[in-house]
Image (cartoon, rainbow, N blue to C red; front, top):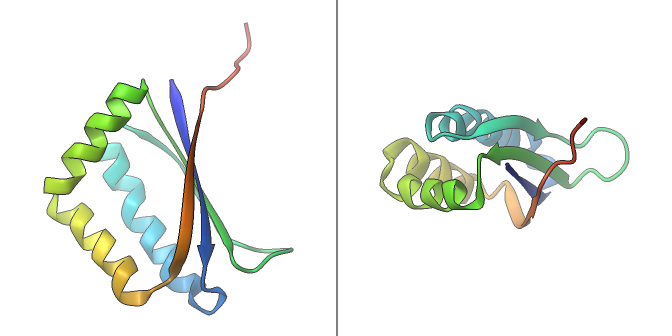
Length: 102
């Protein structure tokens, strides 16, 4: 399993738009074979940081997802929403593998 960690720098005045963007992606990731662990909005501390965590069975499955979303109209609409609202200023993506019990 591989977990994608996305660290967003968001416009703090557009947190509602970022939340809507996150709610758009959760079912889309799941539709394309991933397990979404949620988006996380700023609360205490920095007001311009958002996070997302989602997992795929392997890096190859994640890469296949990245290809499939290019042809999915709902995914393209989510990308366009973020572009139109400019709620995301930048982001960094990292990949992790979990250490679990046993």
